[in-house]
Amino acid sequence: MQKIFIISCFLILGTCTTLLTGCVSAEKYSKMINQWVGVDEDVLIATWGAPTNHYQTDQAKYLTYEKVQQNHIPPTPSSVQVIRQGDAVFTRPIPGSPGYSYTSECRTTFTIQNKRVAHVNATGNACVL
Image (cartoon, rainbow, N blue to C red; front, side, top):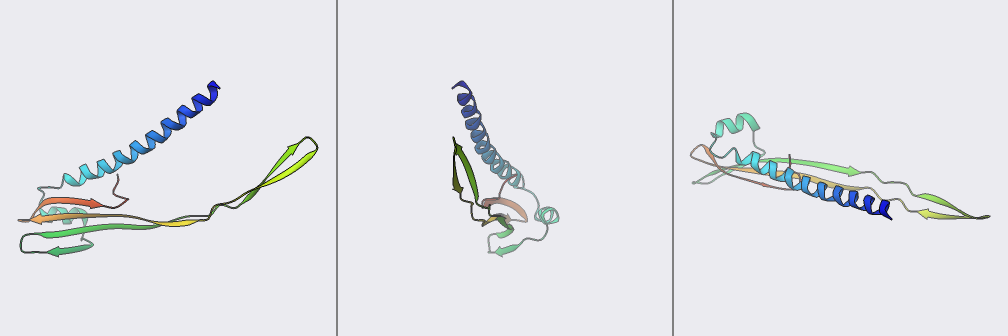
């Protein structure tokens, strides 16, 4: 019984650590991009490269950098579990799982006013460090 409790504690601790790491990673990205506020537009472009998209109004220019990646998790095959109980042998099918695809993306938009970064915004599930 104590062994099950210890294993359960490790599983819960591992899950919590994974969740916190995800939050910390997004927070790290947010802190990193916000350090660009006040930086000259030319320095931003020299470092980040040409933006994926841009838009300009009379008051501001918006430079957007996009990172989009298609990912695929391959399927797992089904299998059969063989169970022996005394002289009897039973089989139990274990279904596989279908593969699936998903998209990871991060769009970071820098608002430029008076040739300097005035604001930064990031959206997407891959805006992490």
